[in-house]
Amino acid sequence: MARFTESIEIFSERRKLIGHLMVEKIKNFLTYDADRDFYAKVFPGSVDEESLMRIRKMETTDLAEVLALEQKMYQYPWTQGIFDDCMVVGYYCWICEDKDKVFGYGILSVAVDEAHIMNLCVDPEFQGQGWGNKMLELMIETARGKDVDTLLLEVRPSNKAALALYSKHGFNEFGVRKGYYPTETGREDAVMLGLAL
Ligand SMILES: CC(C)(COP(=O)(O)OP(=O)(O)OC[C@H]1O[C@@H](n2cnc3c(N)ncnc32)[C@H](O)[C@@H]1OP(=O)(O)O)[C@@H](O)C(=O)NCCC(=O)NCCS
Image (tube, rainbow, N blue to C red; front, side, top):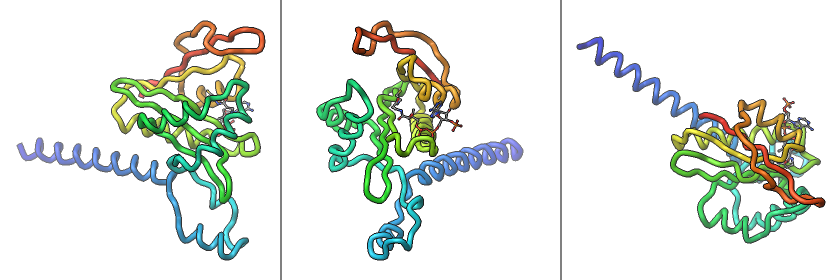
C-alpha cells in the first residue's frame, strides 16, 4: 500500500512538473520586460534591438498594422471584419513585434476535439529568423494545453515555405480540399495537414 501511495505521489509530482514546464515554455514566448522597454525608450541604443522582439497577445489597437501586413502578404487578404470576428469569438490571436512594429501574427481556433490554425504570417523582412517556428510552437503548446486531439490547417500546395515549416513540426497531409483558394486564373486546391497532439 505504501509503495502504491508512493507511486501515486511520484506520478502526481511528474504531472505537476510537466505542467510547470509547459507554462514556462509558453511564458518564454510571451515575456514582456517593462524595464527593458523603458530603457529602450529613454536611452535608445542601451538595449539591443533583438531583445525587444517578442510574441504577445493581439490587441484591437494592433489591428491596423495586422491588416496592413495581411494586405501586403496575401493576394486575397482577410478583411478587417474577419480579424474583428476572430477576436470577438475568442480565438487565440498573437502578434510578433519589435520595438516599433508588428511583423507577424498567428490565429488559432480551439474547439472541443480539434484546433485549427487559421492564419500564420511573418513579414518577409523578418522571415528566416525563427519567428514562424516560435509562433507555430506556441500554437501547438496552446492546443496541447487545452486537451485537444488534433491540430489542423489548410495550405496552398504551392506554398513551399509553409509546407516545410509544418512538416518540420510533424504535420502530415491527410486530404485535399478541392478549389479552396481563389487564384487569378480560377481556384487552387488546399492541402489539409494535421498533427496528432
Ligand atoms: C511560412 C512562414 C510563416 C515561415 O515564417 P519564418 O519566420 O520565415 O519561418 P522560420 O524562420 O521560423 O523557419 C521555420 C522553417 O520554415 C521553413 N522555411 C521557412 N522559409 C522557407 C523557405 N523560404 N523555403 C523553404 N522552407 C522555408 C523551414 O523548414 C524552416 O526551418 P529551418 O530554419 O530549420 O530550415 C512565412 O514564410 C510566411 O509568413 N509566409 C507567408 C504567409 C504564409 O504562407 N503563411 C502560412 C499560411 S498556411
